[in-house]
Length: 197
Image 1: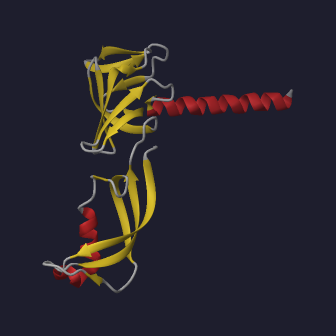
Image 2: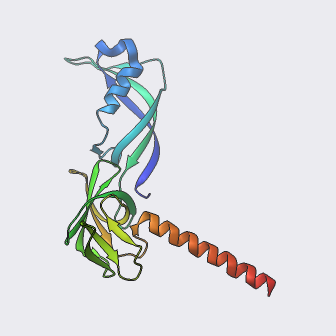
Image 3: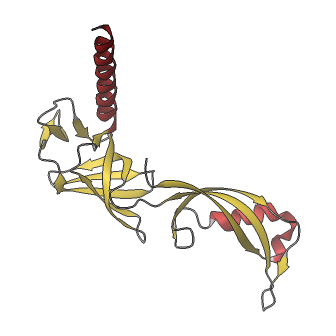
């Protein structure tokens, strides 16, 4: 999935002196407070981190509350989907006008009817709302389906993605993977036929 990146960073983490007994735990607590929030410093939403303390020494800051800074090296997993990138999520609600998706378990995405390809038609199947492809009957989008969508925009404040199903490489992930495997088999068979002839 696009929009995920692994970054190595050198950080200065400021810790209260009362937490100096276990620096690593205090550092993890400070970084944990940044999880699942957009941070301009990292240019993304922090999803996970792994830290190692770079030095044993610490820099004491003067002031009313004397904190001390500890240099750490961190591996950060960040989420920042750019426009036209592809993301995947689970469909949680379908209506004739919209498809609602949860991406990575925390970010909401919506695909409106103007951003759904013409081939997808809204239907009620077995009492469930779904979108069915008119050209491929097995390509069905319903609640619980893993959906690949193109990012139109990402609102960092509320972690909301406006998505699109207009490109041909979007839709049900399972169906798209089956189609790519079938195309690969067909290419191999054609290549073998050419070698024989």
